[in-house]
Image (tube, rainbow, N blue to C red; front, top):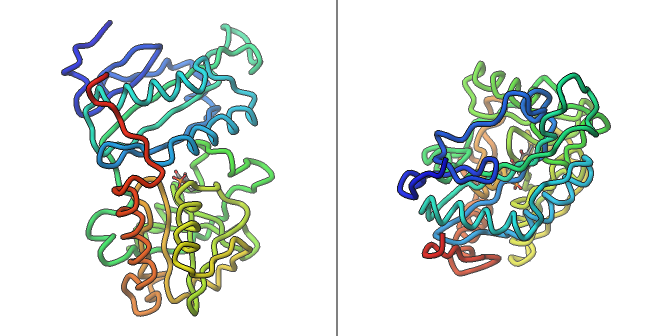
Length: 304
Ligand SMILES: Cc1ncc(COP(=O)(O)O)c(C=O)c1O
């Protein structure tokens, strides 16, 4: 069924080759993406009418599909064009744009992933921040989860995936402790990441972020670029959980909100208990540079 363009305003999905209103976007129940989390996805954002680092997100999506032996029915150019159309049709100037490739459905009776017909889905929703306005202003209250991140040897975290049970359980742990988010260790006292974000610690003017056991976030890469531009040392290396408790500043990075401060860890203040000066400076730069056209690809809203 073709939908009137007006119905796509405010959010649109792309299912089975058709553009549909976001609320109408449904997947088949037999898709292994749903039944087995057998899928990979990527999220790129649009800010003030332009995609940010679109080609970097497409690179990661392509690489991840290859690693999972998935092949999208749409090639890279068609994916790019579909994302453009989704945003144009939705009319959203600030948008959270997700592309997904699932294993798809197997012939009835088959349990062979090679027999599945892989599928491509996408949607453009209003932009969402992991941390709300108040949390971004005062910093997030974070806990270190008791539960380690699923072993990287079992589920490769560099492939963006829907194996979120450890991350979601960590969030519930945080809520039980009157906190708002959580980070997970690797089970050996090393920091990994949290539900939907990478983590940076700053001590004595130098920054670090875990070098393994994490998704290589595009916002993480952007934060590292910003550190370099500002001449502030930043390295990817093993980060011990103890370093969180001793940090001057902590921030998280995600396409869902950029660089966002953490002001409390396990109930204790981080530094002075407020967003630190380096975090605030880089966070402002993150948005101002995008608005000035850095790594941006404009959406043509007149050609949906
Ligand atoms: C587990 C995990 N780590 C890190 C990130 C941050 O990645 P990016 O900066 O590419 O959004 C995400 C994003 O959803 C994520 O799910």
